[in-house]
Each structure stands twice: as C-alpha cells, then as structure tokens.
Figure 1 (cartoon, helix red, strand yellow):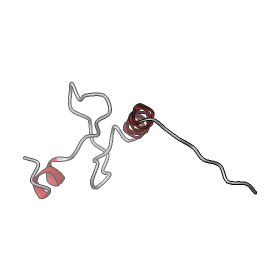
Figure 2 (figure 1 turned 90 degrees about the vertical axis):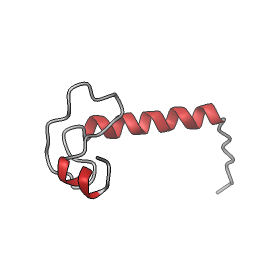
Figure 3 (figure 1 turned 180 degrees about the vertical axis):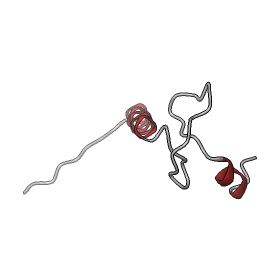
Figure 4 (figure 1 turned 60 degrees about the horizontal axis):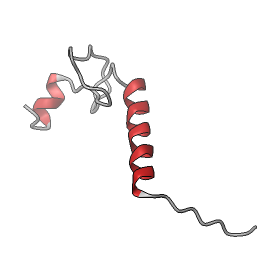
Length: 63
C-alpha cells in the first residue's frame, strides 16, 4: 500500500475544529460537560457550548 500525504491549511483545520465542536455540542447540549448529568441548558447559551451543572462549576472553580 502506498503512502498518502495530506496537506491542510490552517483555515481547513479551524473549520474541522468548529464542525467537531458544534457536532459534540448538539449531541451533548442537555448534559453537564463534566459529570454528564442531564440538566436544562441556560437561556442564551452560545452555539458550540455545553452546559456545566452548579456542583461541577463550583468543584472546577468556574464560579
């Protein structure tokens, strides 16, 4: 089997990263990013974000 060289530009890498983050966020948008407990996401949560429950936010010094 021959070798294949793939070259991606930085803009391509950023686009792939954004697609991956948005796909993860759409699948896990109703669970805590740390403990995966089901929670209601806050109103106005930005696209590509995942919520964090109060207990995990305190434990990870986010609030």
